[in-house]
Length: 153
Image (cartoon, rainbow, N blue to C red):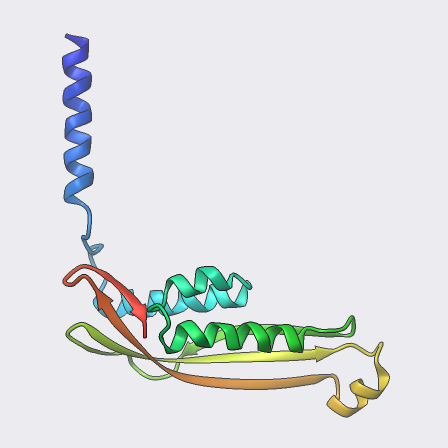
């Protein structure tokens, strides 16, 4: 009797788990899912997890290769004991555009290259801080519609 109840419980749990696959959370729109994908990509880049960032991209696509450029940018601007690079995901500066299985997200990234006074020549030249603002028009495509995941092109 106990085995039948346990087996029935496991079957019910399995059915509930399988029916939940590919479902969108209540109240979450497709735009929210697209923006979440872009935000997670940038968090991986900011945290220097470049392999993870590439998982959010189409293999050998523009953003897949752009991840390597960001890795180089971060490494070059983080060299030396007197500089410190901070990267921020600022905001989505325009509304997300969504057409069927394609989307465009407008993201703003800010970098602060902070130079400490231990390098006095560079500190005077940069006045202690160098700020760059990057505004990107990021294109995404849905893999495995209708409830697939979004990938940066």
